[in-house]
Length: 353
Image (cartoon, rainbow, N blue to C red):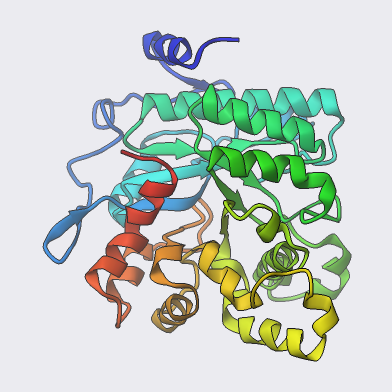
């Protein structure tokens, strides 16, 4: 196994970085730092702010091929000028890259290979553009002990900043004891775990039809279920140092947490295993800012605290193109609140100096 320092020396000596057969672009405009003269500079209270997008995706075609999937070349798979130009236009200084987990049904040997490829390629991207990207490791959560090993290797060898996971593993809730080895390792490492929903197959029939409901309703609902189980099943009490960021504003939980509290009055027996009111756990969970309106963001700050929120765009999927302005224009936020949401909190959690 390469020592991490030697690994990055080898990367630095490379003429270019290869991702599934596509080279990272080294065009004259973006050759040094993935930046152009048109890069938007964001300030708050007259002070520059480094903005960090906690929710941005990439795909590694070489890994998807191992899973029998084909990935058409696009800006999700190539670190080329189009991605940098969009980041510059939006005022996004850095992205924390994650890969949506589609490998939880794989057998162990194949899953191991997929994860190894993805984490190595993610490290190469970040080494090529250290001022623009950090990344979350991929882990094969269907094998929790192996996932714990992959997380540790990702953090210690590849300098990845945590892990990206789905909201369940083949229908099993991640609050189940079988996943404790992974949570224990994440707690020990003190790294961020970014959760992104992958759908609720058993609801596909109910969500079929107009409106794209499997995504529009299903994804936030899965996030709500995931977080609620971590709270009520005691995972956040067993591992109090866990740092978890939930995509899509935490689903519906921050908007309806008071019902969870009152549920413990109505059904007291179901809450005996937790140490505080359900809504109090919102202050130890992190969320992206994808709630779309100033009132939505104001309410989430009131419920969870500005310190728990980070900007997220869901790039390259067209969900949010005005994320920075959303934070800047939401009334009632202090300058410190805005700095924290735009990048300060993410820099601390992701250990960006």
